[in-house]
Image (cartoon, rainbow, N blue to C red; front, top):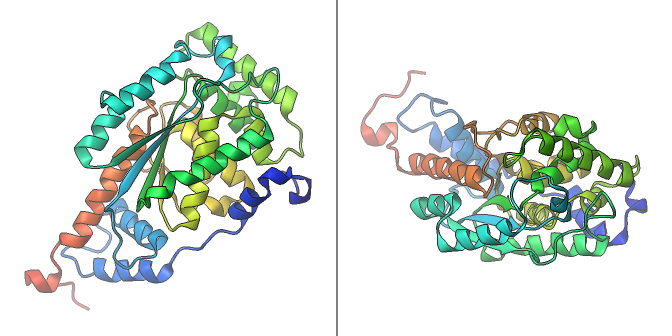
Length: 343
């Protein structure tokens, strides 16, 4: 969208990190394929489960990939545009749900507890909502860059798989604005009902997005600047986590509609910067499918979910754990004394 020379200097490092990304370890992928070929099953018969193990191996750079420390990171932020009635829930629900995550009462808490996924919740200045982007930029460039940097610290615990999700009342409106700015179209093309707005609420959401686009967007706006003008702290932090994971050999699973908007920013800078990412599921928010198509991505699951919280990403991690368990524990043809296919 813009040349690096015209980009605000606070974003230069992030732009370069997105442009200069490590490649997949093809040797590790070949090692996994070789072992898989010896397991007691027809080649390819486990479909996407086999692909998941190859993905883990290639991006971890390990001939024998691990899932000893899979982490679900949920980033929570508040938004100034909620004052315009874009959600049926008040902004204080963000804080209340964060407490619910911590107390173990949320869906994501239960999924993680049941399947031994490490859940971490990152609160992003919940007492200070972003600005109303119909009036001014949601974040200053300095604050946006600082939040991306904060998100990069999410991998400090060295997870071997990172699942990203979010919580933030009003953030489906924010995500819709980002998609509109990145991929083109108006609010009507990208806005859905989110947490369940009625017809009047839907009209308000569309109007808010269109007003924000008209105020902030021009043809030279860099994707990282779009993030500051229309985005949110949780989205900026998720972008940071995606960037850091790529440079630390950590594969990523991205949740639904809002989490994917963070990935869309990375895609707009460099499509290859998302190669280490799996998209967990197709959200029931209709425009999510469109966003995935624009990025030439296919989601692993389609369960009609629209909860957020990283819930879809966590379920995809459960599949990844299952896939790796099969890869590591199935007998080979030789071990089981089963005849392999004839040459």
